[in-house]
View 1 (cartoon, rainbow, N blue to C red):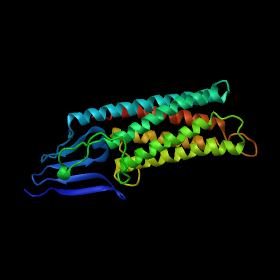
View 2 (cartoon, rainbow, N blue to C red; view 1 turned 90 degrees about the horizontal axis):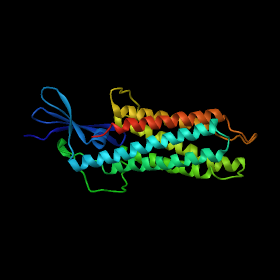
View 3 (cartoon, helix red, strand yellow; view 1 turned 60 degrees about the vertical axis):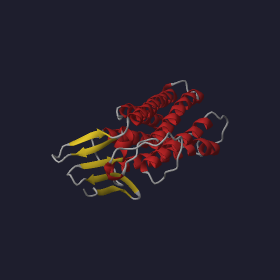
View 4 (cartoon, rainbow, N blue to C red; view 1 turned 180 degrees about the vertical axis):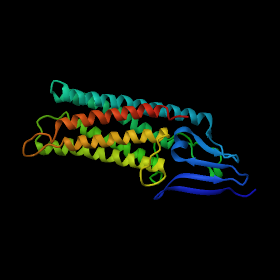
Amino acid sequence: MGEPEQRAEGAGPFTTRLTWHRPEGATVVWESRVARRRGALAVRGPGDSLTLSPAADAEALGRLRRLNALASGAFVIGGALFALGAAVAQFGSGDPLESAAVYFAGGLFFNTGGYASLLQVLNAPRHTPGGGPLVTAGWRWWAYEPMRVAWLSAFLLFVGTLVFGVNLLDSFLQGLSVRQTNRLIWTPDVVGCVLFLASGHLAFVEICHRARPCLRSRSLGWWVVAVNQLGSVLFMVSALAAFTRPATGSLVNADIANWGTLCGALCFSVGGVLQAFERP
């Protein structure tokens, strides 16, 4: 028997899909997101029937389920708290410390979800030559793998949650000048939004196997990525509207800032709910 023919797809330096055409006529497809989220490979037999087949061991599949439950739950709760914080800011007593406290609690859950997402990538099963069973290494809390699009996307997401944490902590500071407010609160907010958007774009690269976003309405993974990216866009709109004008000391538009945060946060909650079903 000869060696299976291999075809690689992706964008730039990233490989996101490998296809092996075996001499006996079967085709095995490894897709980065499907393999690391669901521990599965797609197998097409000689009769042209395509099936998603578990290709990782039971221990690896259990690990994927637990990490996915942690990440999705954290984003559901974190998004709900951010939405509540925005509602308090829009409709509450007007005390900024009230909404800041709720935002900070939500930020802790976003930190947890971001790191759990990184752990999902680090401890996901890897493909083997020729389209054989997926293999899983020992547990890792950290690794540096910038040439993997999944790692880079998850890393940027996690760093974004940490930068948001700086913004949320600085929100408790009192008596700041306009310049200090924009530097200590607004700037980390914008940087965090940029990191979230970059993470979402790389997630599209992973699922679309190209640099441009695609439409795959039948794919649950695509919906998770698309809803979360919409949340990131709304967060960016909110951040831009929250800039404090030096001339007046007021926000560009407080209503847009609050509603952008509220709607964006709800997107992350919905994305977390959808992610709960994207498991082995």
